[in-house]
Image: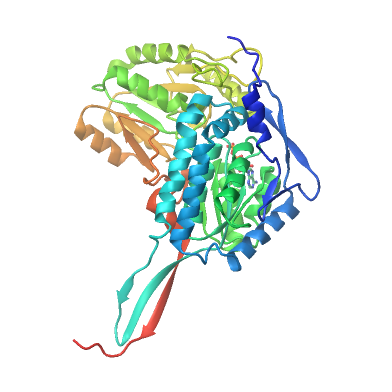
Length: 498
Ligand code: ADP
């Protein structure tokens, strides 16, 4: 395949639409230090754009702006309906700029343009609309109490929220975080991933155009241990929300403990995809393939342990290997491409290292296993069979296009093995037997279970992890609970006349 990536006029125009700076108090500005960093084109490893790099002093400025916007600005004071209108306007502007946003997403992250346009952008838009709808429907209760007294509750915003997001779905992770934070009237300082800052900055500008008051959404590109740590440990934030690795999640939680602020974490996974002997084999092979290879394996919910019943194991492995080897890897802007490059050199190296580990530890390499081409961060779709529970590839999160197929014989055994992990983000089962589907779904210790499907992410359905996969839920009504606090009001009342 031709690997010489094009920088078309559309690509250049999309890049020109960006102000590659920090968004603080409604203005795009450089870091006070003047520091910058490069974001790279994963197709080539060449620099794509130079972006302002937030340091602690910039984070401090952003938190102060968010504080002022919360304490004195119109956002928490306007009606929920007005906030909803502004959020809907932002969603509509994003929709209008779909192609530009999808282009930025592909250039920065490497995901296929067609996928960004068909999934990442519309899902982000839908998510914002869903929470715009909630903005005037967040209310408390009246509670009957003893004596001549009445009591009611109010659900108030928490205040300034610090949010830290990863690079695998830059637009969608931004929308997942912004929706439930903005709807009740919080103000936000968001640290975007250093690998993929571009689309988020464009959304920040569209938010201003939609009428979001200055200081309500502040965006600070920068490094995790510098800008991320300065944000998570800042005394001025009232809540922190993080999506990323379990390792960094632990650090964030310690910092939150120090300041006694609520924390929500969406962390790693090692999700089991269980294929039962009665499953439709074509559907199951396709489903398990998509569960792992979607977004180049860079999903916290990747079905990275495919458990296949012994009676269909060999046939399944043969078909899975064929499906993987047919996957079209190439330039994300080629409309037929299914898999572009991994996001960064670091991820590319880590994935190839884990593939070697799989071979060393005795798993059978059925297909792939090497880099694709000789430039950029492309990895061949890879399938291992004869994987056992103790192997590194069955335990560590690979975050790459590497499917590990394990063999099972009894239902009790596969449930036990599926749950024998520190993670609990997602899991799934392929079967036509409704009783088996129910038994297995109930027994799996995971925040989401998919039956005969995978990677369903409706805005209204809560998503989050059991065990070390996280704390709290994103999406749906559940997420709003993390972004509001309850005030109880008591008031004496005259004796009622009945
Ligand atoms: P990944 O492996 O997906 O890059 P990370 O957990 O390293 O996951 O990164 C997720 C987000 O957390 C990124 O925005 C990153 O910059 C940020 N981050 C990394 N280290 C820290 C840290 N020590 N404190 C706060 N944020 C961090």
